[in-house]
Amino acid sequence: MSAPNRNRKEQGSAYLIALLGLMVLTVVGLTLASVTSTEMEIGLNERQATRAFYSAEAGIGVAIARSLVQGGQLASQQFMLSQDRQVTGDPTSVNRAYVVDVSPFFPVQVENCNWCPEGGRFSGEASYSRVNFAVSATSQERTWQGTDEAPPADANVRSQKTVATMFEATPIVPLWESLPTDANELAKVKF
Image (cartoon, rainbow, N blue to C red; front, side):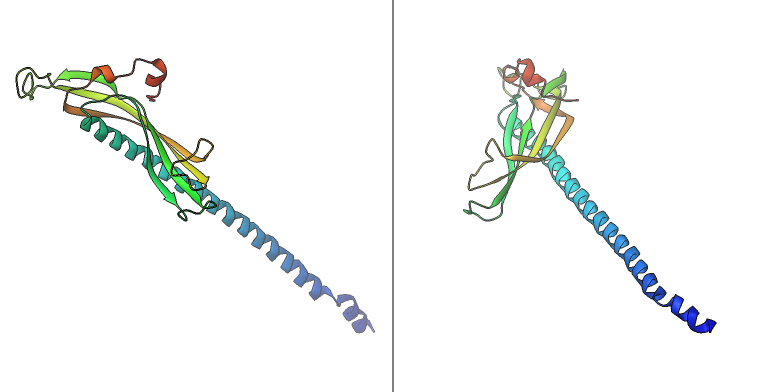
């Protein structure tokens, strides 16, 4: 008689063990899904920050080239470096652009260029210099919807990075009068 009673008491225990196992597996699965979602979000943020960083770095190179082409301009510059459009002409399309704001070129050290001909190639030209400049650039990734070619003032800023560097320009005839004297402009140079 004891054998049939024992079987009756143990009935349903396999069901409870299976149910407990499924609950544990469900919790583990939900935890893994949450961790995966968080990791994907971290990866997206890192990619946006990296793009903004390289846009700021490229912006400094573009500003240096523009300054040299424009004959030694030292003033700050702002320009749109690149733009992506999902669907051209679609007002619901999401647009993305990198807007780079480059500080004025701040001269840190100025010396006469020893290997440049004094007075330029022809007499009467300005003398060349060797100048170390400090410059910084801030790049913002901006997104907006619509058919606007440039980001509107209310565009979303998704990421922003600032890069500061020093570079040497030799030989150069800087246009010292183009160097801003406004303290707010010079405060853009960040180190």
